Length: 403
Image (cartoon, rainbow, N blue to C red; front, side, top):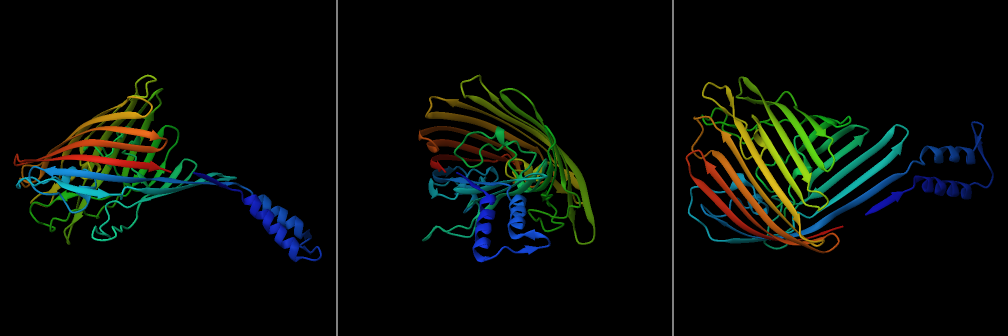
């Protein structure tokens, strides 16, 4: 939905109000009131366009784990998070979950100025929040997905990392999808001249602490430098292709000293249209040393703290391919396959994840514009360093209405 706010109309209203309150023309500094108001109207006559939208979505899921019961109380049941698949336990029965937490709202504005267009965008949903429960009202707190401003080629705020190409994300009912994606949103400053994106993004280190030198925290925030990402969007007809390179510091403090190492990663993402059929193939390849949290929803950590305190970075890689087929104007399907792996040090615990595999297949029906009704079959597998594997099978039914 789009609403245009003409500020010239506001100035006209001010003019009318002022004229009504003044019985005789007045002057100030050699200008009449009418002249001053005309100047004010000229200054604020630039038009701001405001758009808002979003969607309502209901997800119903039936999940069964081979090596344990549900992964976690919240996030593993909302969508597939490979890192939460249980391994090494007794198989549990099927569990059913309904939720509407993926529903979202967004607001965008663009203002023409003498110096260029000023843009702002904010988007909220209700996923991953622990502020709420299913006992009575299912009330959940909103969370920020995106909140950024743009001016010319500059962007500042929180949005997708430049290491992630949204166009390569498959058309799935599951919120995220394949383990091979690099879905990350974070605060950043980005410069985008032409086909390039150069981004300085918020750093955060994830390291295994097998020897317990710092208490084995999940996330560390001892970085001195932001993550640097450079992406080139290759200009192609009928296709999207991007190549991104990342350099990042991984660091920690143990109370008396600070250790750090520099890692890197490369991502190649694409979406290829198959003629004028509307069908497409989407793919992504990722590899590097110390990629860590950027891959598969923090599927692996970036490195391990060794017994001598040094950081040994971990080689990780992933591959994803998806095919979308339009059966008709109202019916479509997507199939997505993905795998991700890590070459962990020999000293990590046997329960450390070594590889993940996921697959999705769906059928979606759109009986009316902006309305999607569909079902999806999801499978995920986690393999640990000790050779044990755990799997999840899930059937998801969804109804989504965009506005």
